Amino acid sequence: MYKRQINDYFTAHGGFKGKLGMTIVGLSLGATFFSGLSFIVYPSIFYTYGITVLSGLVGFPATYLFMRLWFLPRYLARAGRSPYEIIERRFGKPVRLLASGMFVMLRLSWMAALIYAPVIVLMTAMGIGEGWIWPLVALIGLSSTLYTVIGGIRGVIITDAIQFLLIAAALLGTVVYVLVEIPLSFGDFAGFLRTNTQLLHFNWSIDPTVTMTVVTMALGGSIANLGSFSADQMSLQRYIAAGDAKSAVRAFGTSMIATPIVLILLAMVGLAIGTWYSINLDTGLPTQADKVFPYFVATQLPAGFSGIVIAALLAATMSSVTSGINALSGSLLNDFVPLAERTESKRLLRSARWLSAAIGLAVTIGAGFVGRIGSLFDIMNVLLGVFNGPLLACVLLAVSRLKIQGSVLLAAMVVGFLAGVAVVNSPLSPVWVTLVSSAVTVVVALLGSQIVKPGIHSLTSRGGNPRQATQKP
Image (cartoon, rainbow, N blue to C red; front, side, top):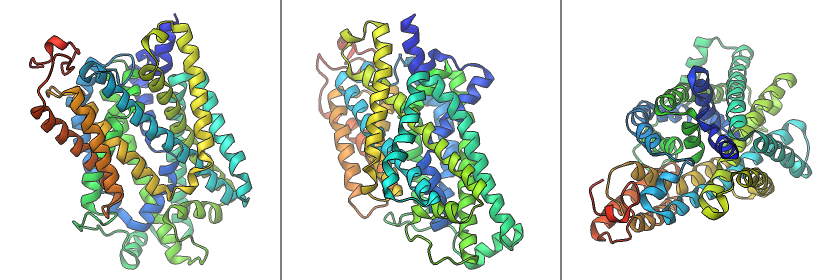
């Protein structure tokens, strides 16, 4: 009984089959990656750079085909009880530990930033000082932790789906409010933007140091999205929860519809705010892009509706925090705890809940200090990129039939991580971090495996059998 319960806690034991289950998992995928950070950052980014940001949508059809036809059938055919088990089977325990360690570092920092983001909005909306940071951080972080500990992945997925609908409704309501309040018809709205701003013009520059261009978003942004959907444990958990490849493909298809809809709504909010402040000049408008939307919510929206928008922001934050807590506890428990200590399923389930609580407490404490790092946009791109790239390369190579040695891939992932760090500290746009770090990891792994001959202890076969190490997979 307890063995089934622990599988259910982390993967729902494949319990989200059927049309309703696939829809819920698909909406959960969308809600997980449109976090409170996205809710604050993207409208402000669209407000600054215009529709160029939407260039990332051109990669969605290719991503869908890749995931449907190649990745998901192969991954789910070999997946075990935990998302990264496939890595150990193919490349050995050290590679799995490194991959899981990168995931843990990525999500711990990311979740701390997630909790911090809505705190700034709440403080602005309520007109309270910085003395309220810690009480608000504790309220958001600990409440998210509570229902993750109790409900496991089932509670996370179901609440994700509900919160996703709330987020979409709040964004649409913001756009409608601006269109009603500004002295322009819908047709004049677009004309005004073309004449008075650059928001409806694409930036076709091929300079990789420019922050936001069509090329940057189409290539760099698409690879970053692919990493989130195929290498992140929070996504992989949901595919396993779908039960089989057919259900997972349909759930992913739902997310491929829902995610662009929310991205377009975020773009419309950013363009609406751009129009608003072009007509209604405001000397108090923040100079930092990621503070524009919170400022608009706090100072321009009616009191009742601003409360709804803030509730949607909190919903977006909590959906991602709860997903992260559950995925992190699964990663730490399945990847780092010795097998001998994981044989008793009753003890494992109890440990999973306590570990979820500890992670929630840790990221809540971290959220109180994360504001010192930098802008939310930089945090989102840099933290995801330097870890997401090597993770993407590792998972794709694990699913592939390429002959890669575990020891070589271990070194390649470190080199890929360092390449990502180099991009962060270069003039290149941070959107390129995932693409560069993943490409470097793959190239080094392929070249290294050609140079270093496999030995008797190599684990390059799908089953990890040393006698099969030199055989064609």
